[in-house]
Length: 149
Image (tube, rainbow, N blue to C red):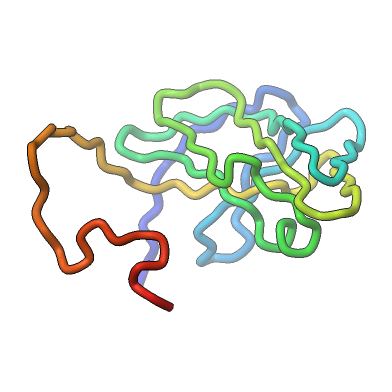
């Protein structure tokens, strides 16, 4: 099955910026790269803002979702502080990634390091309708572990 490709316009805000790249032909996320003048240390428990030097023009009806890179988060403890960043289709500013160090050791990030991954995906824009009651389900209002293991 062929993967449908869409065109996302990108602007380098700095000539050193690296255009996002996919690690494999079937990768869902494109790697985002840090744009730094100097290596940056992210100490344990600290959150640091990293620029990418790029801006995107994401087509309407799609969003850019910034996720952790599994290797960086599992091996080094660095992951986006907000868990998943959302880049709206009408945002034209620089893409930033706030990385939080969940480990107990300092982690060094250098210029050009892959710091997160960007997934372009469709979303629905909801029309919220206030009602007096909601349809009952078997689960109803049970949450937070109510369905067992």
